[in-house]
Structure formats: structure tokens, C-alpha cells
Image 1 (spheres, helix red, strand yellow):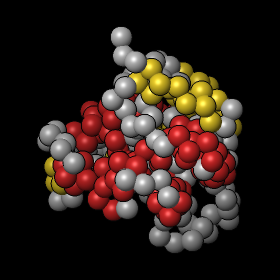
Image 2 (cartoon, one colour):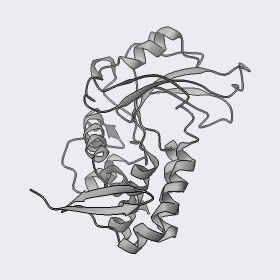
Image 3 (cartoon, one colour):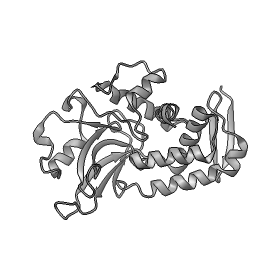
Image 4 (cartoon, helix red, strand yellow):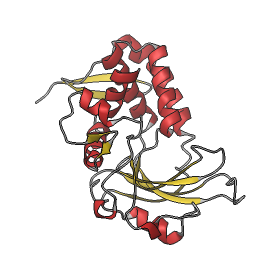
Length: 255
């Protein structure tokens, strides 16, 4: 049986099996609680985590994980003048989990948990995703034009593209039928190419490969759907760990 190390920080126990990264005890006592509070501030503004519809641990591909279904509304759209409604399954970390992922990534990538690294990584994650991991559903973003709320379909933390053109809104406002369709997507419903970036840190295929990844996920010019399987498996692995390899890969290449 593996030896278990117990760390006490911010009023809760953190357990790490031997072989996992051990953060400096002084950091866990003095500075880690501050990072947890900063992570909480980010997660408190997770704009898709509005109206909780259901929690399930039986979603295909995510069995055993507490995935939450949310309905949310955007701000008023630039062109319609009205908010848009989205539906999405999320598996967002707690503030403590997010803080651990960030601290261990900085420790592994930079050999340091100095604030200049942890704050920078948290700020990056906040800009990229608000630390929200969309398991399946639609993500509205005004990515290119302020207040123009455009829909992006997600599966397993990655943007995907549906085969059936009638199931994507030409006017960029999803119908109830389309919203329901996105919640039951399978890979058979998708085009063979996906988006580049994996939530929650916008990890790229190139980051994965540069850090020893061996699955045939392609690259920026050939964005194979296999990337979904890799991202799903790595995020599920991270959920029960102090380390998130998707964040570590990004930090090693970019922090």
C-alpha cells in the first residue's frame, strides 16, 4: 500500500500518494490559502454555472464523475438586443482543486511556486476559460466582437463541429432542438476535425506531444478527433489527483 502524506491547509486535508509532487510545507501554510481565495474569485464568476438543472455520474464517457447540467443566459447580444440561452454539462474544479493544479504545474514547470508564476497561470486560465470545463453542450462567447454572442459546440473540453448543418444556427442563436442535440452528441455526429485547444488552459496538441504524448492526435494543420479521447482521459485522471497534466503541459511550454 502506498504511503500517504497528509497536508493541512486552509482548513481541509490534502492527500497525495507517494510519487506525486510534494509542494513545500511553508508554501502550503503561508501562501497556498491566498491562491485558493484567488481561484474562488475566478470560479465565482464562471458565467455558465448559473441555473443547475441536474447532477449526474452516468453521462456516457464520464461515468463516475459528478457532471453538472446548467442552463445559462448571456448578456444582451449586440444584434438581437436580447440574452441568449445555453445548455451545457460542466465539470468545474473546486477552488482548492484548481489551486492545487496550478501550484503543482508551476512547481513542475518552473521549480517554483512564486506568485509571479501562480498568478500568471491563474490569469491565463481565467482569460481562456474562467476555469470552466464543458463536457458537452454549447458555449456562447463574444470572442471576436464585443457583445456578439456566438455559439461554440463543445465535447470533452474541446470545440467540435457538427456534421449536420441544420443542427447549427445560421443566425448564431441556438434553438431548443439544437441545444438538446448538443447535450447528447456522440463522435458519430461530428466532423473528423476539431478545435485546437483543450480546456481549461488552452492546451494544444503540440504541447501534449512535446511532453511525451504518444497518441495520434495530429497537429494544428490536422486536428484529429482523437484529441477528444486524450483530453477526456487526462482531465478524468486529474480530477482525482493534485496534478493536471493538461495544465502542466501548457506551463512547461509557455509559462
